[in-house]
Length: 67
Image (cartoon, rainbow, N blue to C red; front, side, top):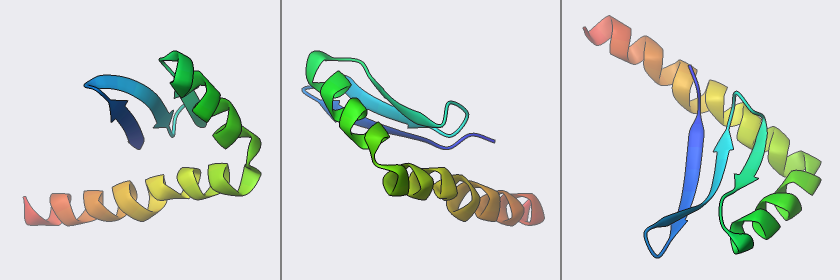
């Protein structure tokens, strides 16, 4: 299971956080700057990593019991 959060601007992916990578990755010039700043913030990275457990793992149990 992987948690992914992407940010888009003008229909182009700017940044992406992936729980398997564990950090933000920028895909545009501005996105690289955003990702670098967000990756410096340890508390923000921890909060994003926790989203996998809070969102994905919780909902997987719901999906499997409903099927």
